[in-house]
Length: 259
Length: 295
Figure 1 (cartoon, rainbow over the protein chains, first blue to last red):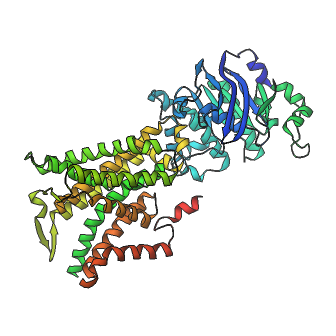
Figure 2 (figure 1 turned 90 degrees about the vertical axis):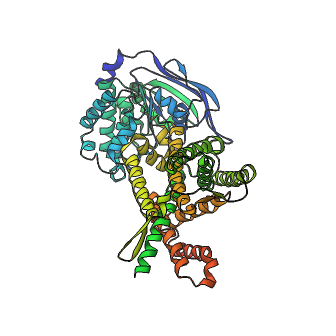
């Protein structure tokens, strides 16, 4: 729990502001006017059950889904409706749902592509060396096809690939999905280190509320396409019962352990 | 035996041309799911560029280079004007767009140049031949095979070593994930069309050096052959396209050489019959299996 104390004093200015975003797929409205913000240096979690619209919110921020209403401000700039590649070049990165690694490319090629849009080649080379140190497993597999990685390795590669783009804000869509509990812990520890050591700001979408609240500063609960509540992560974690009610979790299946 | 080897040489030569065409078609298809039936028209365009320059009295090699450069330009213009507006449409819409473009271009050549065959003479040295162990080897055979091998090696180098090449391979798997790397969609697609134009330009120069003439409709049939080569190899698979192109060349040469004269008019029909039989045995084409496994 030292994370909270460590970061309490370093919350900076607002880096991302989502204002009443609406997402539609044909006639179906998946997100009905969601608003929230992320400050520089924060780890913010977007929690909610399956189908709550979490991924749609991330897709709208990244321009993968064109928002039907509302807006997104990143670093003081309106990025609503911009092309995905332009948004990435402004300093936003996404580790997408199910990772979407290039499985027919090697680990090294995946990482190279992550840095493709960068102009600062020497710094990118240095970042690559740093990342291979941070993710030692990957350094032994640089020449292997990404399709042959295990779930945990693939998740590390997905995160490393996104970081190669040198984002200011990294969005992670369900980084714990499909991983064994021990690996989930390791991945979350990695995410916390990225903020502490690299000054990265992070927005996580998760179903796995319990563990994400260990590293997050603040959390929003999203349900049926709307924000249901916002709270400091430690408050939310203490209110196990409330969280269960909002997320619609079953006690036996997902025990919420207090800190 | 000598006759057989002679036909193998001919098949290799014709197959190379088909392989270059099929590769260009495959690269564009693998990235944006477009079966470009106007791909063959790039050959016609190259032919008319060379025909237009012919009166200037410059060396053939120079016409060929300008023709290839012009074909690359034409492929980029095609993408910009015809295919970009339908990029997010269904594959069927894109395919019909390319078919329409193919017909439009053929009609334009007929109207604005001539419906008749125009001469694009090859260089004098192209028909030079020499005998090795009873085999008549022509300069065109060597040129075709060397150009194809070099082109394939260059393509391989580009796809393996350059960022845009790696991005193109990645885009064949997941286009939006490539955009998430900050790589511009337009850059990847333009690069694919430029390569397909370059390969078509090479194929055109090789083909025209043998045929020595261009007509408004020669592209249509070649475009269909490029597509058939892809179907043989497994649609969208680059190695498949290469193999399919050579297979098509060999089969065509073999049928021409050994079909009884009374049946020689049905060569194309027999080619399609064989392709049909292949698809019954291997519905995904020669290299199509891999794709099915990945799903």
